[in-house]
Length: 262
Image (cartoon, rainbow, N blue to C red; front, side):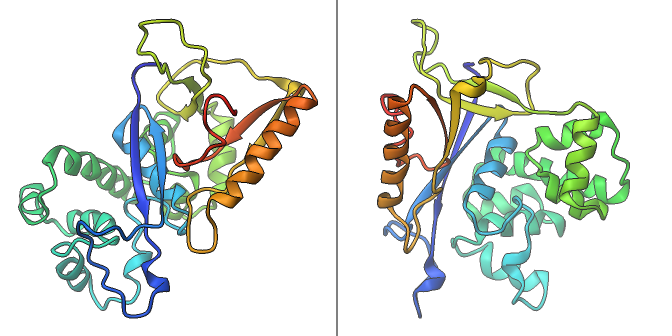
C-alpha cells in the first residue's frame, strides 16, 4: 500500500521533574516517541496520541486541563505557549469557536493540519447532538481515528458496547502492508498497519504458525531500550521453534521492529 500517512509524536515526562519549564523549544526534553500509521492524517494522528500511553483517547481529550478553572484559562495558557498540552489546546480552542485563521496566527501551525483537527472536533460534536450509531456513521467515526472508548464516552455507552456493535455491523479494520520500495521493485517486507480506510487485507493470517510479541511502547522514565531487548530475544527464540513473529509496537526507535529482526 503506497497511500499511507505516518505521524510521530514525542513523549514528554516533564511532570516527573519538579520545577521544570514545560515550554518546548529547540532543547531536547522528550524521553521517547511514538509512530502512528493510517490512511488519513486524522486516523494516524489519533492513533499516535493514544500510543503515548497517557490515558488520552484522542485530540479532544480534556483530562489534561482538569486543574484549570475555565476553558478560557486553558486556551490562554496553552494555546499561546508551546507545551506538550498544546495538542489538546487546539481542539479546545476550536470547540470554543476560535477560528482556524486565528489559531494559525497564534501558533504558526499550517492551516491544513488545523483543518484536519477541526474535522475530528466537528464529527464528535455532531455525534453529541445526534447519538444515532448507524453503520455509515460508525464507519466514518472509525475512519477519523476515533476509538471505541471515545465513541462510548460521547454516547453514554462503554467501549466494549461500541466494539460489540461495530463487529455486529461488520465494521472491522483492514491490515495493510507498507511498500518500502515505493513500487519500484517487489517488496516482501512485512511492515504492517491497521486501518478502517480500506476494504481488503494485504496479508493473510498466519494461524498457528504466528505468535504475537507485544512491544513495550514509547520509552519513558524507568523504561528504555532494555525492554526492547526482551522483544528481540523473544523473536529470536521463536525462530528456533519455526514460529513466525508478529511484533506489535508503536515505538520507531526499537530494534525489534527492524525488518531483519521481525
